[in-house]
Image (tube, rainbow over all chains, first blue to last red; front, side):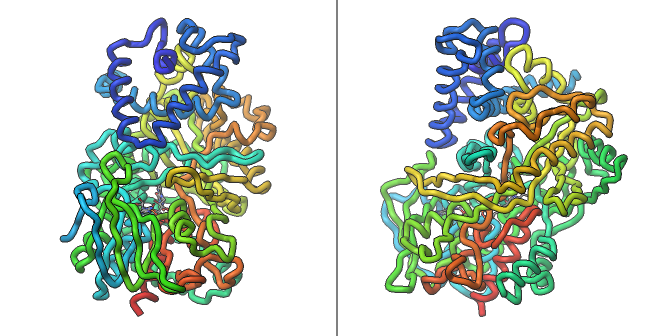
Length: 109
Length: 503
Ligand SMILES: Cc1cc2nc3c(=O)[nH]c(=O)nc-3n(C[C@H](O)[C@H](O)[C@H](O)COP(=O)(O)OP(=O)(O)OC[C@H]3O[C@@H](n4cnc5c(N)ncnc54)[C@H](O)[C@@H]3O)c2cc1C
């Protein structure tokens, strides 16, 4: 849900890469240990419950359409929700940029 | 070679030796090698697993994080009041945090060492006396200057900007041998060129007969009256959970080197070192801030040495600039927005340069016992340090702009990058501390050394004030922060403690 909102550029995020990310995230959290698993789950829960308030919506993040979700998270990261937003974003970005396609993209630049 | 993993243990184990060392990082490895080479029977216990240096160098950064970084790199010191919360990283592996350093090796400034010596009235802690231990460590871990040719474009841009406005830079020293500038020291070196302690002190300890036990979590020191007789703990499985099997290691001397965030927990769980009230206090962190800048030209900051140059021009203001670069994902995470907004920036990662700024802090951190075995860290930044944060960021942004940066990303949660004309008006001074993105790799000082038992945890020799034959030899004994990266000083201090133990 957060990954999709983060990596959607002009429409939807690349579905195959998103699947790969979610699988790798599972492995990451399984191997990272109990405390990081808990911290990550808390960050996601807090963002999911409270980020929509930043755009005046009283619902959970998953109920928002993609563009609204990105907007809510963007607004929230500049306020009290900065640390959980950064934690979630950091892990997702680290994994996203380790996708095998990244090397190819880089060479093309 | 004698290495045993606690993962495979299916029974309780009892061992004995002359010296048991807890923790195999910068401090513990030096102690183990020095004492084993002096003929003592040493057992070294490490909570983390073994990871071969070359295998580490082949890992993706996130694999390194999930395997050997404590909490996968997500540990936080909670900011109190107007202080930022700080992401404090360390490693949990044979070789300790030495396995994830950028290799930077600084001696502490003479004024810091002489200050300790003077204020704590410890003669052999001044720069002259410490020279011997520094020199030995520098030889043992192969400290050499980073050649200018290994500097990344990212580093060179910051240097060019600095020099234009009269700020000089110098080459760093690092513990490397054969570095070709892969720009990923924190996640292992593909060439095995980073001379972390797993490549020098630990093999030396083994060759001299030390037994290295990994996946062994020490829980407490065993005491009889005012003497320690050993340590006790539990084996740990591949999920980093404690198993049901215990070990006890009986020894004539115990040396704790679990790092500044963990040694105090062992002492507290053992009911030791309570008298002064200093245990777990006085935590300094060297709060650090990464500033990124976008240039028109491609920068590709990952080509070149991860860390290669520094400036201590603003040393009197307690600030040092250290070159650094991070994996793409960390660069992207520091860019604002989600979705389309974020994509606009992340497409430009190849054009991003980065530099680090670090504060020589007054301390203000504290360790608390938390549920489970992990500590809770809190940090209240001193007023002086807090006032330095906006100044540090302004100076760094100014340097990047003078190098021609199109825009600068300041480490303020969710903030948009600023352009040259925006800098003067950027509301950094009024930004709440909690909105600054801050990290630390250098927890220090939680079992400070001193000559007054009412204000310190260990004696000038490294021995606890209240229990004979328990020593501490890691970053926790440093009396104050250094203002420079600490691994060399921790190793030199461990050499000094080991020398006392040998004699
Ligand atoms: C990402 C990163 C980059 C860094 N880069 C640099 C640099 O370039 N230059 C520099 O000077 N410094 C650097 N540092 C800091 C440096 O690595 C540390 O200051 C130094 O290694 C600390 O040494 P130590 O012996 O106190 O603790 P550590 O090296 O952290 O070792 C402590 C060991 O004890 C183990 N342990 C803890 N508790 C227990 C227990 N109960 N039972 C058994 N074992 C236990 C831990 O698992 C760990 O392996 C960096 C640190 C990090 C995290």
